[in-house]
Amino acid sequence: MAVKRETVTFTALSKEIKGGKFRNIYVLQGEEPYYIDRLQQLIIDTALTEDQRDFNLSLYYGNTANVREVISACQQYPAFSQYKVVVVREAQLIPKQPGHKNDLDLLASYAEKPQPSTILVICHKGETLKSKPFTEAIKTTKNGVIFDSNKVREGRDLDTLILSYANSLGCNIDTKATSMLADHIGTDIARLFSELDKLSLLTEGGNNDPSAPAGQKNITPLLIERNIGISKDFNNFELEDALSKRDAAKAFRIVDYFERNPKNNPSMVSVAMLFSFFSNVLLAATASDKSPDNIMSIVGTRSQWRARKFLEATRMYNTRSLVNIIGFLRECDTRNKGIGSRQDQYALLKELVYKILHA
Image (cartoon, rainbow, N blue to C red):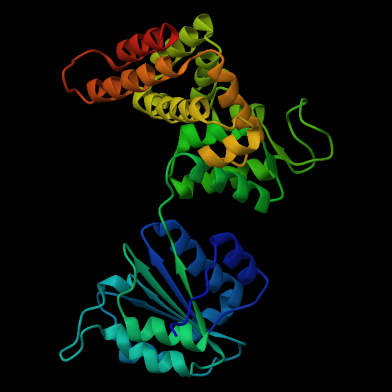
């Protein structure tokens, strides 16, 4: 019977490392480099003090690494420290040696009986590690952990990530604030977490937002506007809200603001966000069970408030209108890419808004 490997999240693994609970072997693999870089640095920073690193930190880089030398370093005892840390960065670049399909296969025997005082970290970016003997040895012996660093997708995955990371910092964050960050920063995880770290520090000792509940650490739209420079009144979240209520005046004011501030408000982002919104409204409109809980399940959101917003929009747009709107959005996306049109992106966005309001 095949042995299942442990599934871990970035937040859970970070908490474990910060608590001083280390695994003998970490395989950090996948397409998102941010998580890999942050975890390997967190292991180094937590396991070793600055003065311990000269004797107890061994760094190897894939294009020049010799796996036998890595194993030899792992088998050494730490000097004046509880741990020795061995890190192989860019392991996907390790050259194959004659007679071996994958040099990392040599680590399989070490994984079966690792040195208890050594922490081995394999950073394998871009894809999953192909050494089956090594990964099977980790799964069978449970002497290590394999972490998949997956790219975050736009939409509910990104919203969930923002919410969970803010919560891990001890902060509350509302739906609008989440949407503002997702809209403005997108899937640049390094920048996103950096901004959340900064916002978390700004909530210490109370918010600089007088509307936030007292005694809580709250990341609010006003806090974001004041410290990141995203307008709380003119953003894609507010455009979505205006269109859901057929508020033409507000919708066109927002598009005019976007046109005056094109650097932070590319129209293609607006079109993508509106496509996601109206697709979910269409799902809500065609659902037989229109309870908020069922709509949450259908569209894949944990926010009952968000589900209610989709349901409210179905009162303004019938199914035929919503199907037409999806078509308008697809057409605008195509024309925005220069196919069949040379119009300015904001002229196309204004035309799209007009069509949605009159669908």
